[in-house]
Length: 83
Image 1 (spheres, helix red, strand yellow):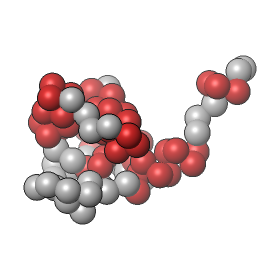
Image 2 (cartoon, rainbow, N blue to C red; image 1 turned 135 degrees about the horizontal axis):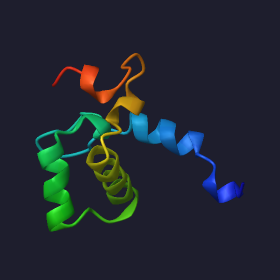
Image 3 (cartoon, one colour; image 1 turned 90 degrees about the horizontal axis):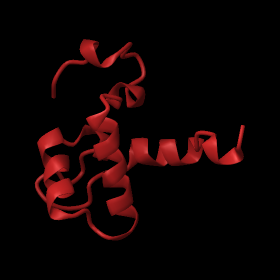
Image 4 (cartoon, helix red, strand yellow; image 1 turned 135 degrees about the vertical axis):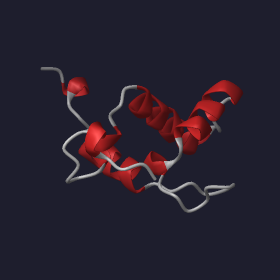
């Protein structure tokens, strides 16, 4: 298996702990931002730089129903309670 296909544990941990630095949801973890807010960024354009890359990753995670990976103890996305 190619090294490029290995999960990046440090990037996963960084994304899991990253918080929104501005706006209505300032201080909330990126992975916990409401999906409509992430979709709005997708439509309007993600910010430049690392924050934009992380928000785009969160969009992909949410679009594929994988948020549960960031919530230990949740067996799958159907068992998660809405925020």
